[in-house]
Image (cartoon, rainbow over all chains, first blue to last red; front, side, top):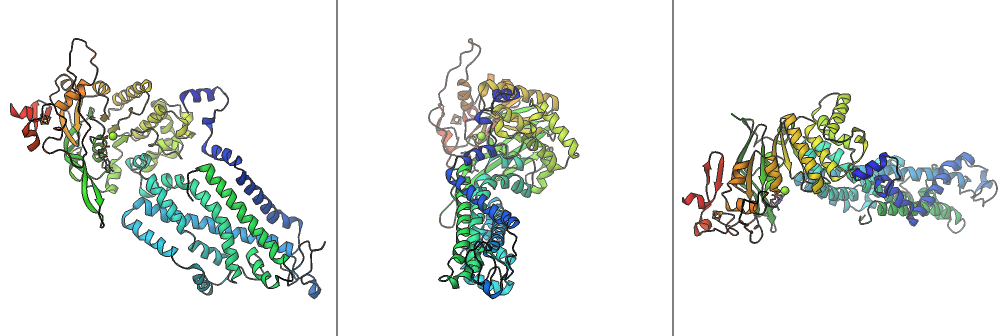
Length: 300
Length: 324
Ligand SMILES: Nc1ncnc2c1ncn2[C@@H]1O[C@H](COP(=O)(O)OP(=O)(O)O)[C@@H](O)[C@H]1O
Ligand code: SF4
Ligand SMILES: [Mg+2]
């Protein structure tokens, strides 16, 4: 903003386009991104479904409701999505399974992004042997075939929500580490980093106060897209039987459970499948839009 | 007698160029090549020369932001050349730098109040309240309204950003301030405001300046002494008036001849420099300036001219003067 613009602002004149804050500018561009807005609506729908739904529809998702007669009931007024192979209400399970799937997606995406950011910051800022060791380790992690190891890990750590998050994080931080390292390599040549060194700032301070905030925009995009990916990951792990364990629901294990009944009760596959599809698509659309709003040239 | 605040002796900063399969050093950018100068307490030494002559590198190496390849840096009688970055940290309170680029030198994700306050945070000076107060005072001192402390750098003009840079550098009361072309990125109309501010602050706070510049009119206005740099070497040093009135090195003469002379009585022959500044990777043998010097002689190719003192405080490195 020029001196003139500041003067103008003091006098309470209308904002010029230069006056937008960074966040304001990103928001503005985002609202004009059609795909991103489509993503936002899908996500709002999913979030309302998963969090508000159970307030209205108060059936216990784990209860076997109507005895032997209640198995595989088709949709009815009592059970809008029918019942499953144990006679549990599918709608209630969709709500609770969605919460678990979203929680796993969020928690693992944020944790793995932060872990990747730490590795990338240290490697990029220090360079030299620290960079070499960390990046060779990253390469090694990337070249491990995940699924066989997953199965091995599941037998060591057991199966459950926290174990899935742990596994996704352990195998999910590498791309972010590379991304942040690359950014830091160019950011650290900026004069404000030299300025921070000139005032005597420690390496830690430079990494967290100066470099990290400047990678944040990119990390938010990466996390957003990561949530979608991790929900699929959860579904695949659950599909192999190493995920969230019965009787607790996740969209992933609902799918897994339903595969045996695909010919008799295809709806048991369709509902969780559709929910996963919509959530992942929503996060991807939104993440793409966010990336374009932040920096159209960014490659992620 | 004036006391020396800082002195460098035969300071050298070569940047290795890595290459080949095993990334060995294949050559070096000889950015600063055995440079010696000193700055007295309270004075302004200007470092002038074309772009690429090594001024920025010299300034940064002096502050140990770059580790010198060889040579010595003596600050207040203490050799600081070998200090580690951690050992340097307390000393950074005394020596600060203001950068050329008003855009790149401020973190775009930090409000300016935080930027200016950071040196106090780093050195743990004062309570939180005292720091806030110091920031407000410093902002007013450099001519910024203290209400703007919550704003981000992009909301300010180039001139205002340089004021932020000054505020950050001065908030911990340094003795030495390296000014790396502080006005060359600014509009001409704003340059003089910043120069006046810097002069006023120097008076008020008894600051010592290393003023890096290529605008000689400003240098004449600001400096007590001037050192002229060409391709990694200092070719001439003298008191301000002495240098402008009796430039002895052909390079200094060429630089000065490009400056318009206010007095029409003084006729100065205009010397046009031929060609570009050579690469500091392979500087010419002997005198670095010989490829562009109108007086170059055979000896200039064979021997590097020695630095000789032609008058008290006036040193020159040129064979024209050794011959006599
Ligand atoms: N980090 C660096 N790595 C390699 N070469 C550098 C580096 N910094 C500066 N140089 C080179 O050193 C020479 C002097 O640069 P500089 O000190 O910026 O000169 P000036 O400030 O006088 O324009 C230039 O040729 C420049 O390309
Ligand atoms: S030493 Fe020779 S080439 Fe160098 S400036 Fe003097 S006369 Fe010119
Ligand atoms: Mg420079």
